[in-house]
Image (tube, rainbow, N blue to C red):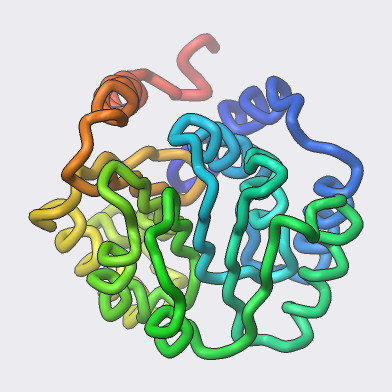
Length: 245
């Protein structure tokens, strides 16, 4: 069973996802074979929905890997849209560029190689959506700069904020994650919830996604309120696999 969402529920959600394609499926299989830190297709579909919902034209992604999440997001951009994505590994960046080319999206994607903390100091905003999925110890140090780069009403989406449940005290009896990463994510979650410029809701999908709207525009308030209601409903639901036995 998954630590956050039970396997039966994840399989059910996967059965409803019709947005993937051959290129995305091949990249996902590569990720499984190589144990790469990729999102899954359900998170990818959510990223695509959020990109479309906020009418994004400029997107920043921190943590490219081999371009799987990049393709999910870029697929919702208009033809003249731009996604800037950052990756520390030259080899992964090369593969990401090739995968984006295969997906027919190279005209909308720019892959930058280097340390993300330095790179975000050089890029110019504003961005409509930012997807944060890099080294977990960098989540906290990068937060204020990412908020600065985000337009009012823009979305900051952060992956892995539940960290297989290990950020929840006592939830996992035998933790397997790096304790430093776990502390970094737990501290980051507290900062998000208290940040004066952000309205935040956490979605318990896959490994947990934090969705933050930058204050200063009201366009996305209905969307955020709907997500908050959905989160409360998920928390209240009984996903016990043995309930019907």
